[in-house]
Image (cartoon, rainbow, N blue to C red):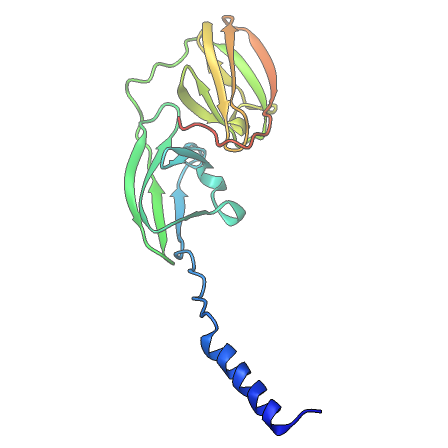
Length: 200
């Protein structure tokens, strides 16, 4: 039988539990991210590779929508590369909840050495097509630049080191022996990996 006294004691106990219950601070929210957008006028600029803090992010024209660049607030180094042009490297301060727009304007590299009339033509079918392609450690473009019916790479005759990288995939490296005025084709499918691609 429940008496008034027992009800009063129960109420006091419940009040004490409420009074001395530990107070949990609200979980700290991560800082609001800032967005970086890119504008480019011609095809070479739109196909330029983008590195953020030393890590390949993709090429200019794809970095929007589901692939838009969101960065934590603070200073970040952004590099833009394209074969035959000077690299662009600049530091930007990203602010939370703000959009930073970067206009990609490339300047031709007068020191660039182009393959001669006897260049070998190499067609690359690369998956994923957004992977970064290097020849002798020089950035040449992304995989989609060198495959299909109307796209290929010209290299001078001789031995060259081909390297293909993309975050989340194992880096592919091989040596090619380009024969003068010869046409060849390669199919390369990158293997998935849990490790990030190394900075280039």
